[in-house]
Length: 261
Image 1 (tube, rainbow, N blue to C red):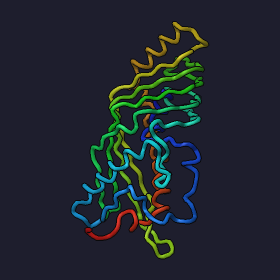
Image 2: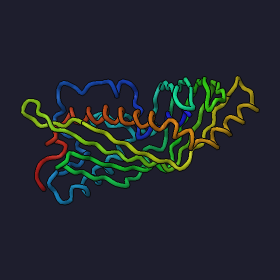
Image 3: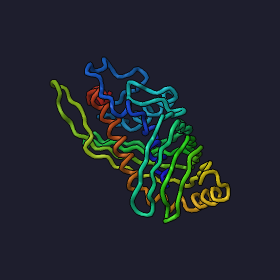
């Protein structure tokens, strides 16, 4: 359902507040890469080991966010409002989620992190053991021809979410300096379980509300497949916006210097 679609937008903190997604990098380029970020050399035989260490070193920083890398605070991730509309397939819903709070993002594990500088390709696979989301919601529409109406508190638990992202870049010059921009983003994801509870469905009708919550929890796999194309597109769009800002702020040679040192 639409609530399942919402988790995709929130994954990895990628459902950032609008100002994070829409804000342009400062016209004045940062003087240097943040000191807490370990810089790796693109020609090093230990490049992928170094990149993984650098990525893992960011984990403590995620609690408070990393403005220099365009990453908002993530533990918890707080989003004032998210609007979602789905009107294709078996799902026709219009919904709004307010005061969204997500916990569990910082507990991710890195399954794979691979850089291929010769192809300007970057691959990362992460697993989140558990993400918990709470918000106030308002929803109206139909799922598999069944009416769905509610306005209240929403709680969602997702287990074992694995997301693999592949970024392919392209070099360009600005003022004689090499920068990267993203040409292609590929995202694949899997999850093992979803638990949903929507309070105050059908104007507080407890019997109808319990049946609908039971239906959603029993059929989450089929419903998740219905929204997979939209979820994937949302993740691609948000990843592209975030990474493009990072690549525009720091040159390719700053992020991944030449050499083996």
